[in-house]
Length: 116
Image (cartoon, rainbow, N blue to C red; front, top):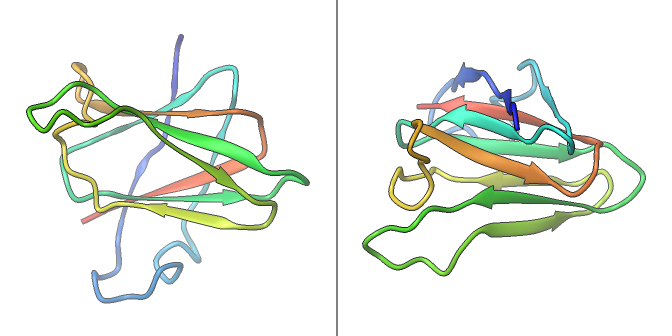
């Protein structure tokens, strides 16, 4: 699967409340057929917005690590709602290609990746 890449957006500052940094940022559509990925260096925050008419599940795909995490992180996002994930650590989430993977159950989500 050729995943779509979510570009990095430099966050305005770590003290901003959620949503402040993403107000003017370009959003990337998360396409079910493609999946998405982003470069994971550590400390990134992912903001996902559901602009569709129904709940959609977003899944952050895990990898095995020393902490023995139980698996992927999946969250159903209600219509019009937002999900914030992070700040992310590399252990458990960074794939062998240096990317983190996000899968979605349907089209209609957009994402912004905030880099520290």
